[in-house]
Length: 395
Image (tube, rainbow, N blue to C red):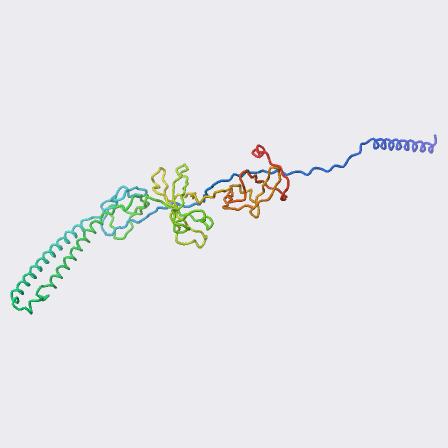
């Protein structure tokens, strides 16, 4: 077979194969069902919601501060001398009661001063009696000499009655009595007594030491009451009563003082007493003083220097709603989902913003469902789906 015939046969076979392939493709295409165009459903976003409950609610304002004594003084002698007695409680942290003798100064010099002052008083009293007798005798003699002279008998001259001498004797007696009182007072001052129930925060004295008047021997503080000074901004002061600062004449608002001490969480009841004299120029805050009575009545006590948290129970909002902070949107609005799953924007009246929640005066009703989760795109009136409670808890 020639080369040309072979090429013709190959070409014919190739044409037949291609034709069979095209015929098969056309047959398959003809038997394929026609696809219909369908519009995909629009996805409905899912949201988490919080069900609103309304009712009376007292605003609680929180702050922090350090406990300090209500009264703190320095124990200072008014007389000098050697220390002959120091009370065993006069140590750092020692506890004492009002009237306890804390320190005694050697009283011998002051006892001698009292004895000398008493002697001077007796001498002045004797001198006054002598002057009074001399004056009476002089008046009697003058009356005997001039009783017939009516003109001169009307009035006894002051020198005859010895009035200057009597006045000098009385003045000397008054001065000596004052010296005696001063000597007795100085003798009493050799015993330094506690002016109130309290504790010692620092002592600087020991037996045998000489002290001069005015020297600081120890620092004492009262245990009858403690104070915590807490700074608040102007908005917070609106919600509770500060006597002499906020409107009205009522007492200060009640306070709960919370601290952790000796490995335990403790709380004490207190009360707002006053605001300090001026606003802090650096922070623009007002310092409010909270007082706790008998802070050492419990064990462990509310000790001075302890850092505490205070919770002030302020005014009550009658129909308040408390919502999570995440539910509040821009422009004081929230997203409310109705029973049909439609989301709407609603403006609310904010009473107070707190760290994790918002307290509202109005804008929501009991049972409203508000959205707490975020959405990329949101429109007023859009349809949403609510995450079931069990699914919300798992997430």
